[in-house]
Length: 235
Image 1 (cartoon, rainbow, N blue to C red):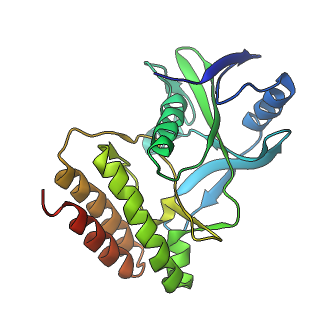
Image 2 (tube, one colour; image 1 turned 60 degrees about the vertical axis):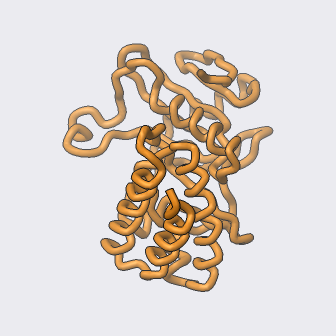
C-alpha cells in the first residue's frame, strides 16, 4: 500500500514523498508536456526522460512511460488503469528497495492523468557525475571491477528479498564518480515466488545475455556468476 502523500493539481493526480507547493507542481506539469529527450544507451536501449531543475528540489529526472513493441505505433503513451498505475508501482518499489539498502534513484513523485486510460510519469532525483556500468567497463575495467563487487551485494539483497528486476543489465546500472552503484528502471520489477537459486539463475541469464549480445568485457559475466554463485551454492 502506498505511503505517498496524494494530491491533485489541475487534471494530474500526484503521489509525493513530501508535500510540494503549487508552483513546483506547475513546473512538473510543464515538464510532462515538454517533448522528451530519447536517451540511447550503450546497450541500444531507449528511454524517454527529461532532466530539469525544480525550485526547492534541485535536479530531477522525469520518466515518461511509453509502450514498446508493435502496440506503440497505435497507442504510444496511454495505458488502461487496472489497479495501481505503472508509475505508482515503480515509485513504491523504489522506496522498498532503498529501505532494504539497495542504491536506487530517490523517488520524488509519481503522477498520472486520466481515469480508465491514463498517461504516467515518475520523478526521481538526478544522480550526478555518472556513467553506465556498460560504458565504464569499456573505458576503465579496473574501476568496473570495483563497481561489480558492490553491484553483486545489491543484487544479492534483491534475491534475498525475492525481488526480481526483470531487465537488469550493465546499461541499467549507474556508477558515479565515487564508485557508488545505482540500479535503474524498476518498471515491471516484481516479487518472485521462486526459490533463491532459481531467482539467481534468472538474474544471471539476463545479465549474461546482455553482456554477450553487446560484446562487453567477459569480466562482467565472470564476476557476477562467481559472486552470486558463492552466495547461494549451499542452498
